[in-house]
Length: 268
Image (cartoon, rainbow, N blue to C red; front, side):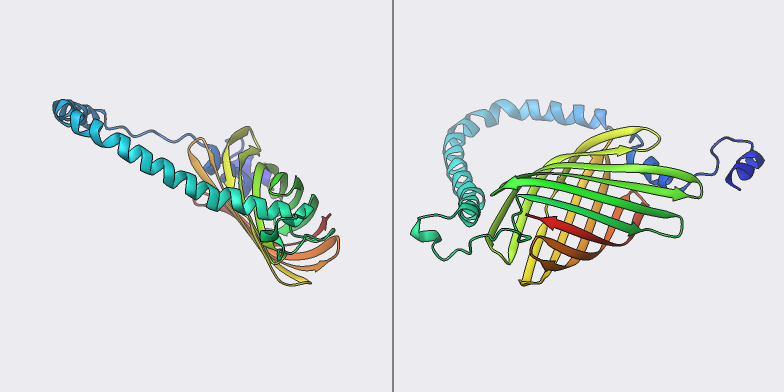
């Protein structure tokens, strides 16, 4: 049917599918709007005031730099160093009395896995479905993950790969909570291959031993286009494995690939 429709149109490929529309929205080049004349006028105005303001700026800059440096150091310790030390103590134990009440991470638990593998099947609509796999390896607060989703469309016959690679810094103060910060890249492989910067902030909460809830947002940029990816799931947890039900929505411009999924996880 798609071939007959294309022949009737007289234009090859005029029958575009949902995957083609998504890829086009994600990778098309954005026109860069510039206002050079306004920038030049602003630069001229800045030059007139530059000499007048320079002496005053020099006097205050050293004090401001000192205060900023101290604040940055305190925030880095509070948000990165201390949570990382607590996370490491959960994995390997610690003789530090300050961490004596911290829950030690149990082998096979879903939090802070050393190795984790996920496999999901997503139903987008009657023509599009996705097979999604993720592999994570880490120790303590440091981990790296690879996630690849294969989308297939049957009308027209088409396919597309979304590949996410992130280095993660993850923190956990107890077996009930884990939060991560990840930075890396996204590769979209469809009619062509395009890559760009990506970041993710996964959050997992385990209110009971056999139940968990996960939210994994990711934002990526391909040729200046934002590609957002939101993944929500609930899981039934056992030692070493979990069963999950979730919903995932990937969006590029006005195009989206969204639908429920079910999957299984192995965690060590």
